[in-house]
Image (cartoon, rainbow, N blue to C red; front, side, top):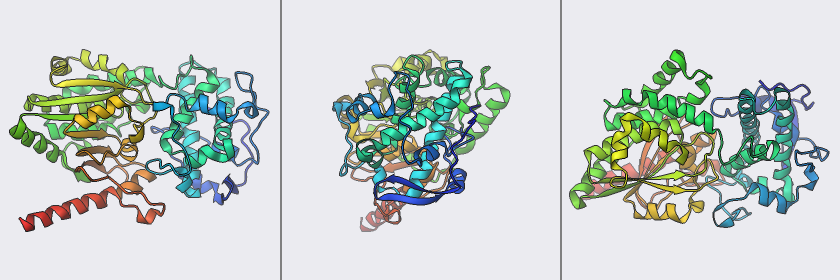
Length: 466
């Protein structure tokens, strides 16, 4: 555990200046109670980033591993180091450039302050993992946590607070990982090969359970895929694996959505769409964007079962070449294909199952940053299946029939869906429909729940006129 030996002395209520013209007095105790965990992990001092950012000036005396100080980090250097690798070489940030679901310039002080707790918890989770595996010495953890907070604060303030005003959550998560890489070095933490060992171990544990789900129907497997996303396999792992207790905890969660207990349930709509397309043209192509590695196991199970039922169905997986967080990446495919219960997938490679590799440095694909190869796959598909709550927020494709599947979790997820934490969603959005419509006034956001209700009402109206 990272212990903070000398926390900054900031009063429980303090005035935070996020950028010129954006400041507020905040109750830090209330913010601490609202701290956002990262994959189930909370830092004992979730206000650490807030406290450091609240200092009147960043600590320019901080000496970074490359010998530089914070004041040596110019905007051009920050741009090159922290925003590298974006498709087309574009940062894509600016006062008039939207960032789904919103740019931070549209956020209020309460949201920003709670997001700051996410920064602390994310750094804590990464550094704790490095410490547990012996990649950093135990006595370096507290120092590195402070340095990470100070460096990220400096990036935020660069170019007259350009970054903090114009990023969204997707950019912020990328910055967090690249700050850690900058501090400890790429050989210890590679921001494009994140948590590879942990993800592989959690995937292996889930693959070991996969055969036990083969008897389920396609719709039940779709529900299992939703539940696995909130079973937090990674946080239950010890060096010895899940163990009997951890396995039972995962299974208890896994069955939660296998039946009909979904807040929005269009699973049957997708299966009917595939069947109808088979009758009309003997073909249906589904483009697929996957989320966490563990839940992908159940996703691939239902897709394999669907390909067995519908021999004309083709599935094209868009798979990231970068390993970001605990997402499924190209590095995970070999383990899946080696698992006996996925023999049917291997047999269909090149005929019904296709894998398209693409690069994305973000934790969730963002529509305007989809590379050309991903765009081609989506354009050629009859429908798109997009997994994950973050992907719902950043990857809307209103020009295509789209299915979004995720479990609601956190304030942003609640805000844009109109649902509650742990509500499960398998939602159909017909071409021409977006899953939400953003407004700077939260009360005027059109939520997913409202979109689905409007779609249902339109269906009723259409039936009356037939």
